[in-house]
Length: 192
Image (cartoon, rainbow, N blue to C red; front, top):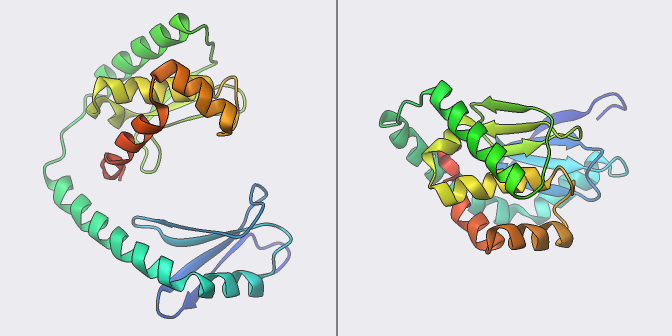
């Protein structure tokens, strides 16, 4: 990987193509696997490509197991796509805007802007400037999970990480932050 290159693909047997990507946020080598995207290795600036490849080889069993799981999820998604509900974007925007504003007022949060998008990998996000992005598909979730995502993003206007303080605060707002996070993960493939 050249100094200017931030990412490169390398074929590694028996898993296939792996994306090696430098990340200023990465403190250590990290492997992630996502549906339809495959295997990605986040590399801190201090790591060499050779170290990263060696790391992947040390995680082959884990990677293969999770790639098989991703293939099942991809097939489930393809089947679900056939019967996917059509979302009225204007109605979804209104619903999410009204609920976000109500939760913000109720819990003394402020945010800058709201953007509703059709995202594939996230239910929501909050920028460094407190702009909140929400996935239009949130409206397909139960109200309790919608509120969880909205409160999660509103809390990021105050706490910009997922540390212990963040989870304690979120637990105070939702009653069971970790349990709701687990429930939300079961809906994950609706994002793709």
